[in-house]
Length: 337
Ligand SMILES: C[S@@+](CC[C@H](N)C(=O)[O-])C[C@H]1O[C@@H](n2cnc3c(N)ncnc32)[C@H](O)[C@@H]1O
Image (cartoon, rainbow, N blue to C red; front, side, top):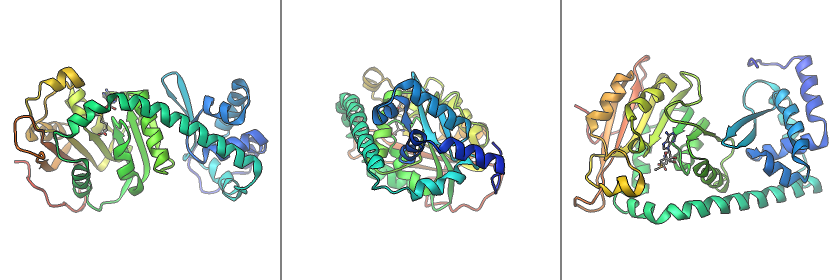
């Protein structure tokens, strides 16, 4: 649907008709709290799946809700595209939150979320011992996150995508600064953990998509910031992932890559499916360059201890060279030669 300032009479009538039914209005009120699957909605509303699906179909057709697939699941969210939602948003915001029916829906929503979070954390805790070991070998996460924020500086972030978002940590860090935030990951289990974490952090409106970093399901030039944080070392062809990321970058936009510097910890291939044992500063800078971005900053974060069993975390910031912008360069530790 095209973006328009004032909705037409026909559109307004279609939208009001779609929303003016009890179950559908309750669904809209629930989706205002965050994205949900059909089975979540079935559990919360206590209605059959075919009925819920029919209501959702009508809401999608009216341009109020959008649907996306995650493996065998379909997730639904209020759309931020088009004007349909503008018609109904004031109604959703003015609904009496203490209404007994809406209160009961929200209580059930909390129960569904708690269950989801429990299942996601159970999956994650199986990986946790190995991840904790890995974490102990490199700079603390707080240090890495501070370096990420410093590298990005104060430049406005409009549309942000985190490729290989995993548990959604980068989304939590950066979503408060962005107008639109999207996380992509190949793993449904990881996305479930991310979803639970974002809900726990009270972050709403973040889009989570299942997909492959080699074929991200977004149009060219969509994002002014693309993050690839600790993902490249899992990939057979990181240069291709950078090329795909570059395709998503809007003119003048940026890619931030965070990964390990070259290391010799072979056990990470066996134990944690790492394909690549880190990257030299010039290697990632070269891939960014070939993809049409200038590498304007690299930084290396020393491990907690000295030794061959330690990992250095590296950051690379690439700037799309189609437009010259005056974004402020933060203090680089080391400029790429
Ligand atoms: C170590 S985790 C990092 C997650 C997150 N970026 C972070 O730093 O917390 C790597 C993530 O990359 C995802 N991943 C690996 N290969 C991928 C691919 N081809 N497409 C999309 N995601 C991928 C994995 O599912 C995993 O969640």
